[in-house]
Image (cartoon, rainbow, N blue to C red):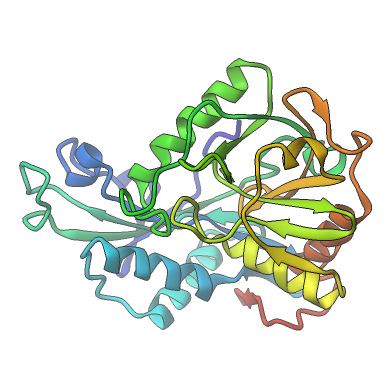
Length: 308
């Protein structure tokens, strides 16, 4: 798994501070109770310079997550867009991963967080292929997790907050310890939900399927991008509940997310998906996606925010 590579500066509440100075107290509310909202965003090196993928959509989701958890952020989306652009410029980096974070700092002694100040951090660092160098080309081996995703109206799954990812950690660690690259979790109703940190798509009979936003999974920015590209390519796509066994019988399967991009899955529970190779629909969607984000194809959706 990738380790964090330091860059010179992190943006904190309107100022750039040295990487080593971006510290929080051990008793900050977010450390104690997981009350940290965050986003994961990629910046790609393109012929026109660094370009951040769907920056506004990510920031809008971050502010919506903060709203759910009653964390007022004193910055507009426009201000945060410019801060992220300046962050990449100031760190002199062409391609990177950005991790905007809104945390509750030191103050509150218990779960009620209102005595802890709101702090906003914008770090970035270089990051390559999340699931390994060959994952995008050859696919990965997955399993069905023994851990289910959260039930609706327990923890808000549409909020991207640190505490939600305790579930993803259990799902991912179990998969790795059992010899798999990734895992796909079911919801409390036994239907397909999401991966440890990715949305799930299957292809069957030339039709693209993905589970609905049902209170068990995150509405991914890459997920919505895949659906838009499918529309561009004239692919029939359906949002509907998916039973576990579809993962074994479908023609193609892939997971997607900011870190994973569009990663094919070649087997589930050691059963090959289709012929065990990357399928044509997956490859077409992946190619189109990577061409757009890397500046090799026209960005007809306006997804790229150029840094310079």
